[in-house]
Length: 188
Image 1 (tube, rainbow, N blue to C red):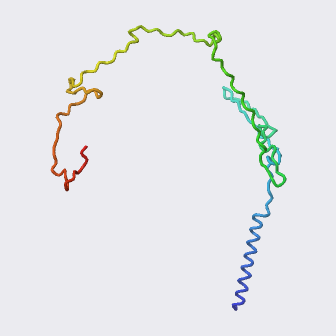
Image 2 (image 1 turned 120 degrees about the vertical axis):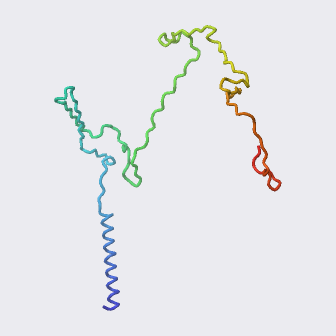
Image 3 (image 1 turned 180 degrees about the horizontal axis):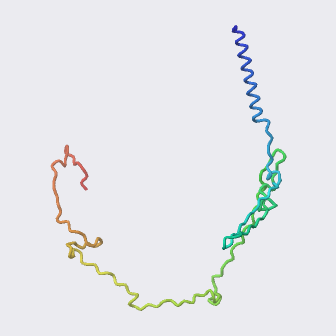
C-alpha cells in the first residue's frame, strides 16, 4: 500500500466513526417522546386503590374483612396545579398563591371587674393555711468560734468549716535564685 492509499483509508474510517457518533447521539437525545404528567394536564389516573380492613375477633376465628374501593383517586380535593398555565412562552407550574384570611384580633379583657363577675365554678374556694409564730421564726445555726477544734484535731475556719491542721509554715532560701543578677522564676 502506498502512503496516499493509507491516508485516504484513514480519512474514510475517521469520517465513518464521526457519522456513527452523530447518529448514536441523535438517537439517544432526539427521538424520545415525552410522557404526560397527569397533574399538569389535569388528567386524573383511573386507578383505584382498595383499602382493606381486617377485624380479628377475640376468639381468633372467622376474621371480618372489609374492603373499600376509592374510585376518585386521591383523597384530598386540593390540586396544586390548579390555575397553572402551560401554554405560550411563559409557563407556570403552580397557580397564584391565595392569601388566607387574617385571624380575628384578641378580645381585650376588662381590668376593672369585681369579685361578683367571676363565676362561682371558677372561684378559689380553698382557705389559706395558718401558721403559729414559732413555725414562722427561723433560727440560724450557731457557728463555732473561729480557731476552735473538734475531737478529730481539726480547726474551724469561717467559710470553710473544719479543716485539717497542717502544722507550721515552712520556708527556705535558694542560692541559685538569681542568674546574672536577675531574679529567676515567679515569686508571687
